Length: 214
Image 1: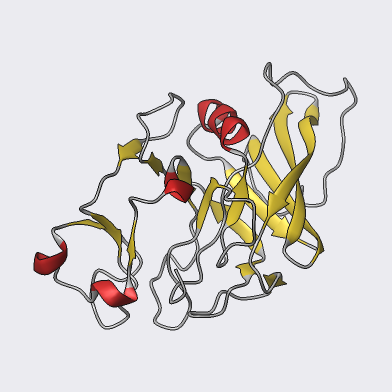
Image 2: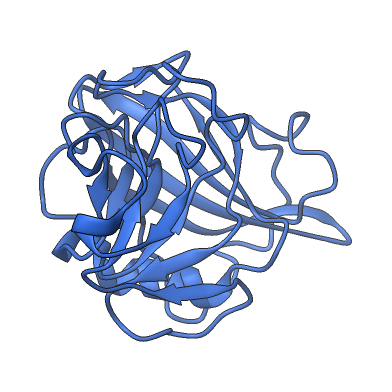
């Protein structure tokens, strides 16, 4: 993972996903997420630590359905821009296009890919595969596997892809995920405990966003 500015990975939530309060709130990201109805907020609290709050928007407005979830971000904290080889989590508003993991699909509204030893995330900036998931045997991959990440690891028991560097610009990082924590800082991802992450994946629907700030 050292060659990747990996990102976002998972947070925890109350089982029922019921609003913590009936109160309608005005979250910090409210004017930046368009018509989105599901937003995961990640706010840095120092170093590689952050807190996660989960919001749902209904007819009356935004309500928090989970708050204060302990979250790990990059070992270099948060940064304004993703950068290859720099272990910081980028700030901004990011899509959550699909989920994956070594474990079977836990359910939910997002497409889910169960991964194994032949699944990779290409970090090869000279390849047209850069910053995409690929399936190939290591000795047959059409990209540099040494600059890439094999997805068959414990931290990816469950994960959600973050829409960071969707233009796939060399130098702007690759492999940003919201994934299962190993208890320490990430290389740029967002990570929470697996049980909570599974609950969030089951709740997510297409169009959900992650908002990261400080």
